[in-house]
Structures are given as C-alpha cells and as structure tokens.
Image (spheres, rainbow, N blue to C red):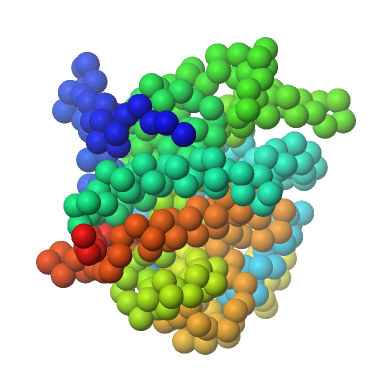
Length: 428
Ligand code: HEM
C-alpha cells in the first residue's frame, strides 16, 4: 500500500484552522477533555467497596464519581441500578428480552442515527446477520495483511529513528481511524477532513453541538459514496454493505451510513484506548513485556489480560422492560440499568487479586466485549489490531521502555479509560 501523505502532513491538514472557526483545534480540545479527567476519582476503589456490599448498587453514581456520569444523565428521572458483579453483568447481557438496548436511541442514536446498538430482537438479529460476514476472523486476517500492518508501519516509520515518542498522540489515537477509512474505501485525499470529524465525534460527550455537526458532515460526505458503490461496487466495506442481501432485503442508505458512523466511536475509539492501556500494563511491568518479546505465544494472554485489567469501555446501558431479579437484586421494570463491565472484570470472586496486571494469571474470559446478542461485532478486528500493534512495537522499537524523563503514564476516566499520553524511549 502506498501513502501519499506522511502522518505529520495528514495531521497538519486535519488540524488546519477552518474559516470562521480559526481558534478551534479538535485534537487540542480532545486532549484537554482527556486531561480534565485527572480530577475524576479512579473508579476501581469505589467499585470494589460497593461490590463488597452488594452485587448491584441502586442509585446515582454521579455523587461518588465527583461529576455527572453519562449513565446518570441518560437515566433522567428513572431509577438507576448499577450491576457490578461478573455473574450479574453476564446475566443482564444475555437476557435481551428483559433488558432492552432501545435506550441508546436517546443518546448515541441522536448523533449516529438508528444503529445496531439500539436495536432489540428481531430487528437486531436480521441486521446483524447482514453485516457480520464482513467481520469474520478469516476476513480480519486479510485486513491484517492488507490494511493494518501497512498502516501501523506507516505511523511507526515517522518516528522509529527518533528514539522517543508519545505513543498515544503519534500512533494509538490515529491508526484505528486510518484503518477504518481505508476499510470503507475512502480516498487518502479525504482523510484529513475525515480525521477532523472523527475526532469531533470522539469528543462528542464534551462538545455536543460539534458532535452533531460532525455527524451531519459525515452523513453528507458518505451518502454519495454509498450511492456510487451501489452503482459500481469496489473491494471495500461500503460496497459489501450496499450489496449484501438477506431474504430479499438490502440495507438502506441510512442504515449503511449509521453503521459507518458508529464505527468511529465503536471501532476506532475503543481500539485506541485498549491498545494504549495494553502498552501501559506491559511497560509498567517490564518483566512481562520482555517475556512477551521472548515468547510471542504469550501475545494473546497479554491482549486479554490488558482488556480485563483496564476495560476501555467501563460501562454500557440497558432498560429493564419487566421486573427481574439479577444476582439476588430486584430490578424494577423501567429502571435504567448501568452494566459495569469494568467492575465485573475485577470481581474478586472470579479473578484472584483482580487489580494486579498479570499476563500469567489463570486464563478466564473477561467481559470487555460484552456477551449475548450484542457481543462486540468487531471482536476479531480489535484483538487483531492489538496483537498487530504489539508485534509492530516489539519488532521495530528494540529496548522499548517508559521515558524516564517523562511523568509515568496514568490511565484516566470513569466511563472510558485510557492514558492521555504514553512517553517511551528505545535504542536507536
Ligand atoms: C478493544 C476494542 C473494543 C471494545 C472494548 C469493544 C466493546 C464493545 C462492547 C462492550 C459492545 C456492546 C455494547 C452494548 O451492547 O451496549 C460492543 C458492540 C459493538 N462493537 Fe465493539 N468494541 C471494541 C472494538 C470494536 C471494533 C474494532 C469494532 C469495529 C467493527 C466494533 C464494533 C462494534 C459494533 C458494531 C457493536 C454493536 C454490536 C451489536 O449491537 O450487535 N467494536 N463493543
């Protein structure tokens, strides 16, 4: 794969001031929003205390978090139940008939359109069948060779000779967006504008109006692309979505565009956070990083342990449509159910000494990709991107370690978690 622009040129174009909005840089705004999370407490000691009392916490988390949490905002006047235990979280996620996903229509749906995330059965199953073939493990092997490895190399080429970098700004934040843009079949000349809007969507929780505007921009940009792929299919994801047929039905333009837009928060943002957290876990435990370097068969354990230890998406939501008892706790019909994937992944009844990052721990499934009908559709892509990132960094940056002159990395956030920066050095 040939790239016409270097990463620096691409970023410069994406950050270039826009007429009438000269003082605004979405990348800077996103960094500032991330750093503001420094004031938010670490959720894990809080979760641990609550879980020790009960498998679910009934009531608001905002007071405990020291800031209004997104889940409380979405709950409005409804009662909130925070399911915390591994067994409770698993039970809620498996029961799509009682615990509906439709509530996302009032949050993500307003910006993304009607996506798979907010669908219940039978609509969800029909839609999912139409798109899941695009994300099989086998298909992801092709993406790895043709897209992911070349994109990773392109970014690492830009700093490999330098001997130091901020891995978040120079690699993690940008490469998953680039992978999605190529998979969608977008031309490289459009990438700076696509990046800019993708960052505005990522920062949507902090700057809602800009998030809406960016989403509308993406709609207007993608609609003619979808039309042209219907007429002349190419070897890309949009063509595949436009032509797939199930029992005589095809996806509409709106459905395709909603899915493409969802890929930014669901696919790019989660992956950048997950890959960053993985590198924090390994770099802060250099013996484990060296073990993976020496024995690449430990790669899978490193990826899975990092997803368990620092779940990038800490909580997701459902609405109870009937009274139900989960892990001994009564959840009334109508309650907003906040499912704490992060807390479940550190449930001491499932994982011994759960706060410890340990790639050698007994292998048990974590729940970072959810489970049940809405199990993450990008699970093979995410795992492959994380493995490919680690392989690329180990192969290309010998002696990779934390920069002793920089602040140690800190994983921040209550709803989404990752470090704002990750300064590293290596031998050149
Ligand atoms: C480490 C990275 C990732 C994590 C931790 C993650 C996590 C999740 C979680 C927890 C859900 C369930 C949401 C809910 O039901 O409320 C989900 C759903 C989804 N994810 Fe991921 N995800 C990741 C990467 C990706 C990637 C790379 C893609 C790109 C295709 C993707 C696409 C989706 C889609 C389309 C859904 C909706 C599935 C459905 O509703 O049936 N995710 N993800």
